[in-house]
Amino acid sequence: MSLSGERFTAVYRIACPPQEAEARARAICIEQTVEFPERLIEDAAIREQVIGHLAWLQAVGQDRFEAAIQYPVEAAGRELTQLLNVLFGNISLAPGVRLVGFDLSPSLASQYPGPRFGQTGLRDLVQVPDRPLLCTALKPMGLSPGELAALAYRLALGGIHLIKDDHGLSDQSFCPFEERVERCAEAVARASRETGQTCLYLPNVTAPADEITMRAQFAKAAGAGGLLFCPGLSGLDAMRALAADEGLALPILSHPAFQGAYCLHPDSGLSHGVLFGQLNRLAGADAVIFPNWGGRFAYTQAECRDLVAGATRDMGSVRPIFPVPAGGMRLDRVQELREFYGRDCILLIGGDLHAQGPDLVASCRRFADLTVGFPDQC
Image (cartoon, rainbow, N blue to C red; front, side):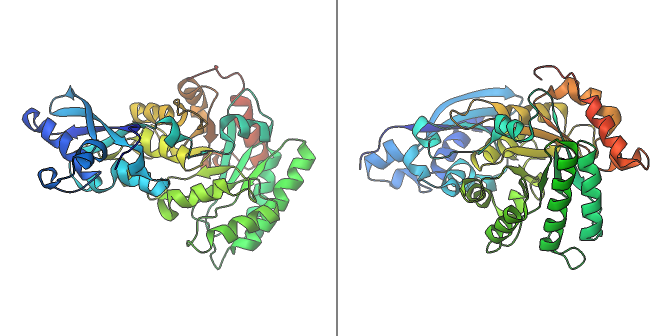
């Protein structure tokens, strides 16, 4: 056996006493590749070429260490699923280990086209070159397709750029998927013709594995301008398949449902930048929704900055994507959001648009006015 020698790097944070740090790091090298006692491996080529290499180990706090481990590109195969397995498969079961970043080698990165549109392409679709995009959700659950379509029409008239299904809308008896998508797509298209501004309707196509493609194709045929997808429910690779489908060619907005536990504990799971940024980019999302600091969830400013970094850091040919801060955002926080995120974000405000008064169109226009004049960068 002779491998190419090309490797990619994963960085882990390890919580342990100092005297255990190197042994813990070297255990990751084994666990994420051969998963076999090294002393029993007779083939020198396996020991030298397949097992992960510990590139560096450094202290980052009391009983906290970061280790960079380099894996052979061949171990990741040609599938996103196997790349995820090498990055954080078995070791996700161990306490005190957190994946905080990774860098793919050129040949490995070339296997993943990533987002079809990314920030630049999504801006081109809605013809908004120089300020944040505006997003909202169709809610509450329980409204009929006709009621949601009437709501979508008013939101589009008000100047919202992206109108998504609430992630809780699927194919329920009170709101069947096909009827909802047809009615809402028509309503948004009608409002766009009246305003002269492009608004995209993004239905939720998260579904059982054997129905995802059918729902996405139906949405495309009905005139949807994009797709909402929950990779925590249906899988990152299922989202990758949607992004790669030339017959769809629609932007994808990723929703974080079911992913929270992967990142909440600081000593385990995945960093916010890895989970919501890097992995969503590899899986083809063009924008990623996450709970903003100060909302109804417990994310911090530092975690949100890490997430933005993961969504926009250099990943070779993989395009940067839009961070979409959400989770109980209000109009009176837009100034705060503009100072924190800059212009390269999508601002998602839901319930507070309705709380401003009976004139929803006017509330949306006020939202739009508040986003003019953002700084160039975060």
